[in-house]
Length: 83
Image (cartoon, rainbow, N blue to C red; front, side, top):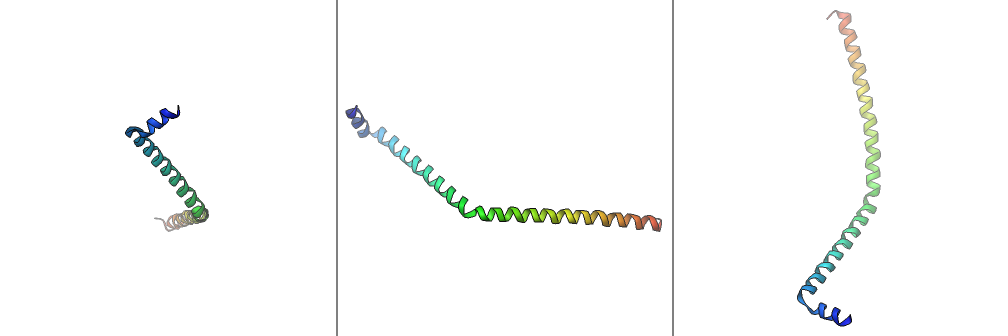
């Protein structure tokens, strides 16, 4: 078995397959490392943006309510003036 592996490791196609496998492994390790790093760095920023988004949603709801109230007041005034 050892001689078979030795012969396979000396052939050109096996070396090509081995190089490609090592490069794929290195690429996967690099990708995972970068993903974990940026996840840890930007986790706080993501939470901050989500809380800011919730605050802005509340402001939009208040503005929508104010718009409805203003429209109701306008309609009442228009009815009072007879238009």
